[in-house]
Image (cartoon, rainbow, N blue to C red; front, side, top):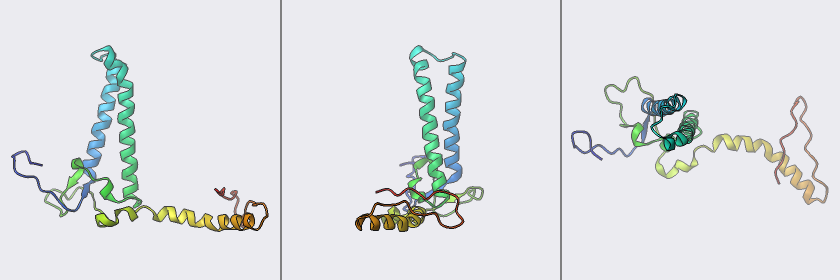
Length: 165
């Protein structure tokens, strides 16, 4: 990888993401979809094949931008490591440089060896609430009785969560 002046670009061991660069890239994608939609609406596409392909292209761009925004949301909420969001278009140096003051830096939370352990905290919390209900149903089934739905706790108005076998 080289810079514009043919000097080697630095390769950083730590993958730090620039929120500013990531959002700018997503804005470029949305602008491209907007331009395609305008060309299509005004019947200004260069040919019939392009006119037939334009709606699929617009949808593809929007799906990619949506997926990237969802991933960005998970990183910001701490459900996913920023390492999974890193790409060359949003990479910045691990140490802040002059001019980085207005940017939000999304830094990895762990070493690459433990990257898979992130994102389970929230899911474990939701699952933990259902475990007693599932265990209770399993015990009744094992004892020969029909599995009855768990009773509602006092003061709750919502029906209990369904228990998957």
